[in-house]
Structure formats: C-alpha cells, structure tokens
Image (cartoon, rainbow, N blue to C red):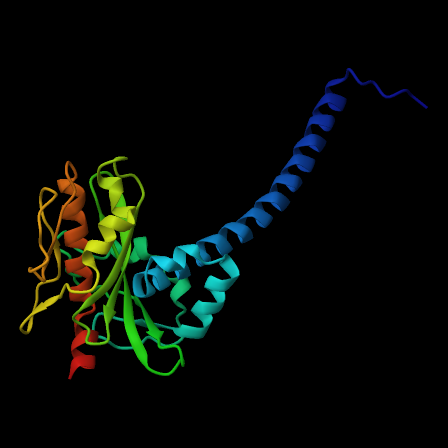
Length: 252
C-alpha cells in the first residue's frame, strides 16, 4: 500500500477543499442561529417603538418579556391600502417599509399604477376592548440616509399622542437628535394634524429654543439640523396623506 504523499498537489487541494466545506457548514449554522436572534430583536424593537409612541417613555424601562406581553395584550395589527381598505392575509411584519417607500414620487404621492401596503396598529385600552390610539409607521429621507418613525394619534384621529423617530445615518449631535426623548416629546399631547377639515400635519420649525406651545401645528426645531427636520416634516405629511382615506372613514 503506497504511503499518502502529503506534499502532492492532490493532497493539498483535497485538504483545502475539506477545510472550506467544514468552515462553510459552520458559518451556515452560526448564520442561521444569528438570523433568528436578529429577527427576534428587530421584532421586539418594532413592538417597543409602537408601544412607546402611544404609551410614552416608560416603555423604555420595561423588560423585554414585559414589552412582548403588553404588546400582545393591547395591540391589534392590520394592513390597509391608501384607499383605507383592509388587506386580508398580509401580516404587518412581512411588509418592507423601505420597499414600499420607493413606490412614492418625490412629492410623496404614489407613482402611477402603484398601490402601497400600510401597516396599522390599534392600541387598545387596558380592558383590550376600545381603541385608545392609532399608530401609523412613517418612512422617509433625512440629510444622509433613510429616517423612519411611528406616529400615534389619539382616538379623535387628530391629536398627536407621540412620535418615535429613528434614523440610519444622520449627523451625531445634530440630525441624530431625532432619537432623543426631549425632541420627540415636543410632538406629544397638544399638537393637531388637522386645521378645520384640512390635513396640515405638524411641522418642525427652523432653529431651536422657541416656544410653540400655543401653535398646534408647529414644534421647536434642532439647531444645525434643518435638512433632517425637513425630512421629518415631509415624512409625516406624506404618510398622513396616505392614511387619509382611513382617517376620514373613521371620523365619519
């Protein structure tokens, strides 16, 4: 029996191939495990943002299992289109907001021939019966990259309950401040999206340190972050227009 030549090309290539197969198998296993964990974390973050927009910053203090339990108890999920029609058989967590956002023109209107799927969340009272808040996801573009948020309206579908915002690449200390509670809380409680029967949304103004308490359609801005604020304004206005048919149907 001939002795295996470990210096031969065949041995070297065979050994290298075996190592590649083993490493690929290990990477595939690890990747699958990580993907599931990452998916669960994204789902928990989504649920946390929805609850926070409606119930406030105390949600930040809750443990992960408590957030999931509260969400299951109080949130009803559905999907509608821009006509306000419920889309049966579609789960909200299967909707790619970035992909749906690409269906919009620069002015926020739908491109010709396109339809859009809009997630909708109804936050119930503690009994789980009556709807207290409606939460509507929004998506847009800031200074450098995409921004997104969850806008909660009170049951009158006019008063803003809360607005939770996040971003991909806004400037630290400037536009990235949209993630700060003290910025988001400027929208809470007394801001209105309608002026009479006209949808006007709520606008973040240029500059900072001004008092807009008596102005229901304006909030204080962020110094040095005008373009990010413009992106937030466009995002809110565009998505409220997409949800307008639903809003009007509920207000009748």
